[in-house]
Image 1 (cartoon, rainbow, N blue to C red):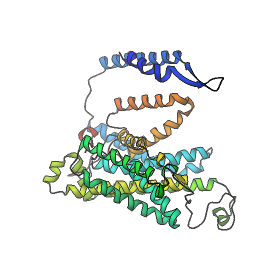
Image 2 (cartoon, rainbow, N blue to C red):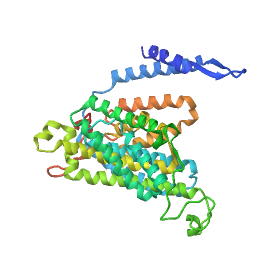
Image 3 (cartoon, helix red, strand yellow):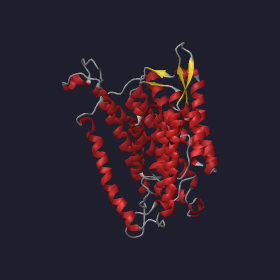
Image 4 (tube, rainbow, N blue to C red):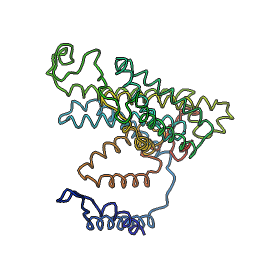
Length: 415
């Protein structure tokens, strides 16, 4: 049956392809051999999966010892990843492409950590997170191009404006949960995108905003030609466009680490415990006297603020933004990073961003097949690791010694 379903899907998706013909017209090219190979792989994979399910030992719940072992492994992985991220620009063989890819991965790590506050800690399913990303980007673009403000002045303003929009979104969804909350947040993201397209006098409409100023290093510009007042002239270096890329890499690394530090600090505070209590059981949370309204609004506001920071960075890095950069697929990717990494896990979100964004680039040579490989890898991970790559949790507060617990014992964050 799996092979039959895959054949129905692969025949139009893979078997038929339009190419430019000799007379500049489109012709249909068939690739039946590719379809046969893919259907055969699905048949063999499904057969092996059935055999494995019939003969595998009975599944047992993760023991406390195994959970503690995984937590100890995580304590070594996080410093290694951080050390690698710090020295990456100075490693031999690091090219401009690797630095750009590193900036892209760190941007999604920051976005994932911001959404993790809303979905992973507070348990509020948000499908419109890209709206705050767009608010931050357009806030910086408009403030810098219209009023001539610098990046360092606009960065906190972009975060504040995004947090304001997060509170605006939080008010109408206070009474919603689960699917209804997801639908409203999805609509909010689309409203922002449609507003950006149609408010032509302010946002430029579909044409977007160009000529966005680049950030400077304490007033030193990153001019490719050098000259007085430039970064290379002040430090006596040979002018190179790589200096700006390295600066942007460390800038987004610092912003991402700031997001992680604030999240970890807040999680140990009463506010963070209220978020986790809300995620586990809202009724019990109310019975404990926790103000659910303020708890939800703070989660939306703080998560949106970090999305606004990431948006401002995106705008200054690209120097051009348009509504096409803030579609629903961006929200879906960020949410997938959070779910794949493990709801509430900071390390898991970083690993998931590395796998999803960096891994997607690793399959670039496969051309049109990379989306197929990527989708298959996602399905495989969610089958074997349904609670995410890092599913262990360490309680923020506990009687006696704190011990890691399995992700099976915590809420899934459905609002």
